[in-house]
Image (cartoon, rainbow, N blue to C red; front, side):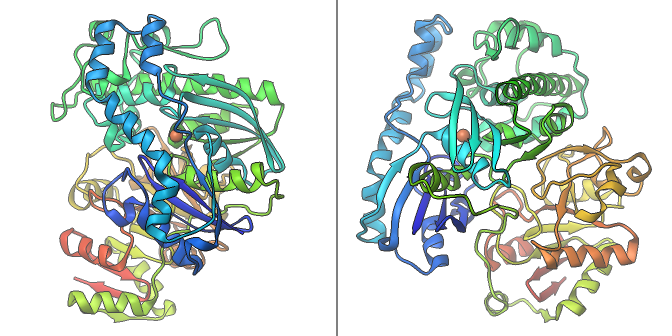
Length: 567
Ligand SMILES: [Fe+2]
């Protein structure tokens, strides 16, 4: 039985499962080349069907990540409860509530859209609640038979935070927190306060910048903005910091009075902004830990699964993993809305149809892959000279080039699902070179100096590098690097001595593991610096994308499977 899962607004994506096994999953942005593509994921669906060699006719169920009939009356509710002023309400309404509603109503046409585009089919269409899609995406592909599940994001239909328990093939909702109390919207509002862009997914930047600041305004955030005083949940006071106004770089008086006017995009970034980022980050972390402790008390479970955009906050995750009583954790690599496509499909398979669990997602390589012949055809078409080498020749040669300072565009196997490059579409460099962060951020990726870079390392070496065992194949946790190791890998250690490693398994990506092994033989270091293979656009998907990035960007070598291009 084939089940298709869909995310259709913002980080649109499709996933296809067959008898409970994942066949394919991919974000639409990788095909459209528009970051965070929002709209019906035609190309992603086409890829998933093609990967299985089927047509839509063979799909029996479609799971959709949103229930469009739970109308988003959040603004009206907020007005009724006095949480926002009539002036603020009007500002919001003027700025496109109607337009947004239209795109949600458009979801009712999705079954028809599918048939119009992909041909007749008798599939049954299921609208799954957004946060339950997140919860399913975390739990049903986890290695746990039972777990607590916490999902948190900007918002679903009206829920922003969901507490669930997963047991076998069933999810049970325990509790929900609704708008306007949203950790994601809090963090997005701070993102725009610092002059970044929440719509561009700039929340990463706040987290990166936070490492440089001091929590000078922590008390303000915890007492006035994001509070947990006196009740078990949390309270986001939108009279002080309002996500919807922040979208337009407008900020209520209380925050301006406390922190000064927000930074406009392009204005100078000062230490004050580092401190605001640091304070907000710490407020988020402490609120999150409060909620994690609560779900621990509610469930008594030993395992915790998390999803939703907030679960991408790897610094927060690091603290949750090390400071809360849960023993085991699982966050799949597409923890944001793209992963809801996966979740909606699994929700139908397990929760609705009652099938037993059988699948564990232990790697992220569910996107398109290309043969050597396809890579060579693309190189020929682009007029690039290349050498074709066996791995026995290629991998030691690449390791040597990297150890001598080369930056390599590495294109290997099926593309990653999720925003992190994990050794399928990665820029690789030498983590020992202190200047690599500057070179990669400034000269190659054309982005801010403070963006952290991360290592991909052989999973066998966790204790040596961190002083403790660490398992994280998806690069979603920040962990402290052992004192004696820090100086050896300056390019991938953050200013506070932490790193965000991908633990590479010989089993799930043998070729990448082997390349790292060749680097280790030369240098004694069991890791490479890994950052996503893209310059100001979505991660490259096809050989053609990789070639065009190579032609337009400043890095030394391109590897398309077994084909090597040097400048
Ligand atoms: Fe979400």
